[in-house]
Length: 222
Image (cartoon, rainbow, N blue to C red; front, side, top):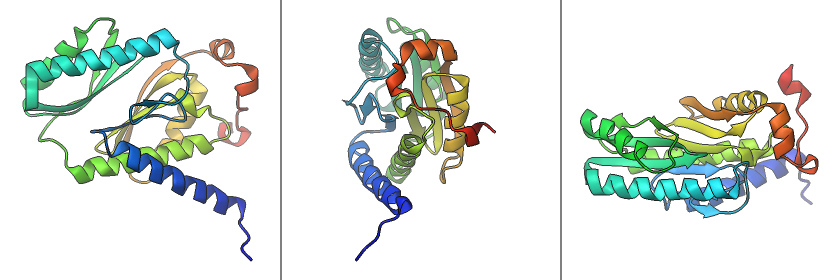
């Protein structure tokens, strides 16, 4: 007879989640995911704190920006473009500083873009093993945030590039600090970059129905 503890069940769920994420994300060039929410490897699976109109705008921004970058820079860059609430994050690699600077101008010229965070490195494209490691780290982050009793995991949009984690989303300062602290504790995470839109607790109360809220973890705030 086998007796499963709560820890064992939790580890089992995490193993299944990591396996599924790895299969889904390895088919893409980078490792973006909305944790428990809108996107995993490009597939819309739920909702988040953006309006449906803004979500469509973000998707349009990504498509237009990627198309213009391909047309103007071709294979001189290997980049990933992710938009959240009109904040556009560019990660990846450019062969020359001039190309890196051009990326910011090209993406910034796309309709409805409010701000560009250009995190592109001047270097050769990352290796397959590096990208695979990013996918694995992204999976661990997802599992950790989903398991946190005091966080709504679908509020966080995470991109991992060469071990650096970029965290986006419309969250309160309390949520942001908690999510960043959890992410920094994960093996393999080199640095965490906050790119959140900070909202007040009052605005959160208006955005999120009471029945779906998680209560803050008292131990995390002490």
